[in-house]
Image 1 (cartoon, protein in one colour):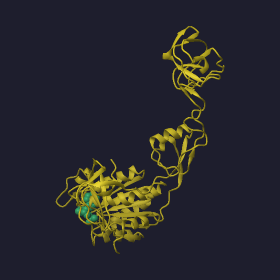
Image 2 (cartoon, rainbow, N blue to C red):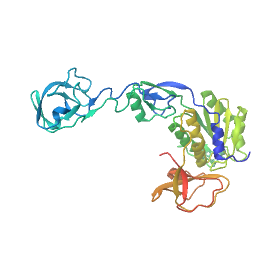
Image 3 (spheres, protein in one colour):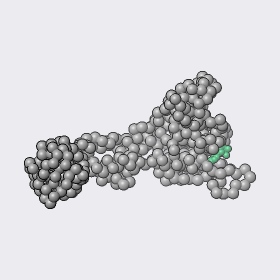
Image 4 (tube, rainbow, N blue to C red):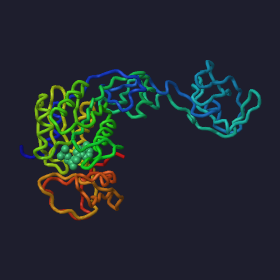
Length: 402
Ligand code: AMP
Ligand code: MG
């Protein structure tokens, strides 16, 4: 197979990926979940005009000048409305959140008053409507406020609660099984013997999937043997994975191993090899209802491939309406040579420049280097066959998560 352009590869990955079924969750469990439908307010907020301050509810006409005396006729606290009406020459004691009594249209803050028994003396003229929050200034019943496909933030939960939703309909979370492959891999904290290295890439891939709202199953490390890999693939399927993400076994010749194991389990291959650096030996296929992404083992390659393909796939399954990330403009921090036929996602740092952000590719771009990847702020995109570009010229970036 020829190298496939990144955009086409992504299109194929997303081609028949559909948002997962709806389920109902309590508001407290809805953070980071994606709404299956538009939400309209079930009530008006505030439901009535209320005081914004502690003070006295009065008629504006009575407080057009200072030094007036008004007769106190009652008290209104939040949750305890006052049944009576404030008439000319009268005032009601009121506290923040208290419903404005009939007749009153203005609140004089207590700092501008003095009290003499059942009389309040207004020391300063106050204009009509001061310190009053009108009914519905936040939102009104029926107003659509949260949209289908939106991933709920902490603030959205506050709003949904105020809209009077105790439960929400959200898409099921995508289930992502993550498998490392390689005879050389040992778990962090081990004492590697000669030729062994520490399994590292999966920790970023799993964290990335989780932060996109996926449920993750850590399948650990499979050895470089078809049967071992196939066993892990079956575990993913038995768990009900929506996505199986494998890493490693991607070198020429060796890649057959992961693909062969997947083939024995019934993989239908979509593509293998993308015009991408790092990450050329990336593959995608389907195994029953499970999407399979096979990313290379080199840590930076695995990360870039997951960033470019796993994240949008999770977002699509999660029902999000913002599946693809839009590259942002920046300026180049150093000269770059012409690019070859593979799109390059260079690890770069960001700094502030006179014309906006400046992206400077780190000097070491080898796909095995984890220290520069951790230091990078963004991926600087060099399109396939891009001409040489000089420092200061426009470029596009994808910011990495903090
Ligand atoms: P592979 O894709 O299996 O040919 O691996 C390419 C390179 O990445 C080799 O140097 C592997 O040792 C290394 N590698 C593979 N898997 C991992 C992993 N899970 N964590 C860290 N390095 C890995
Ligand atoms: Mg390997």
